[in-house]
Length: 100
Image (cartoon, rainbow, N blue to C red):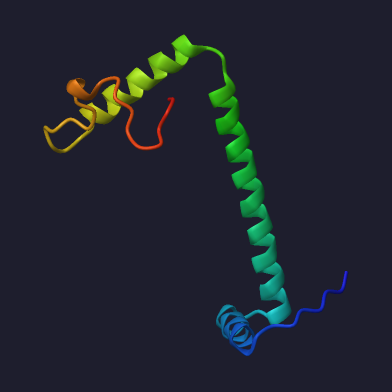
């Protein structure tokens, strides 16, 4: 497929400089950038779907156990003695976090 793009002078200059630095033609660099962008978007969509499947999982007990394990692991793997999740804050939801 042939694609014609009307670029601003600034973007055209940027692409030319980047292509020159990488030893590529402007067309090859543009194709590489476009391909990388599409692949990144696909990975993001897959990650969101995976996270959503975990959220939708009906096994609440397993989620609780996993959450407790993560809290314990994060608290124990700190350089300071200050707990990241102090026991007096247990059950308090902070910010936009609503469910583990």
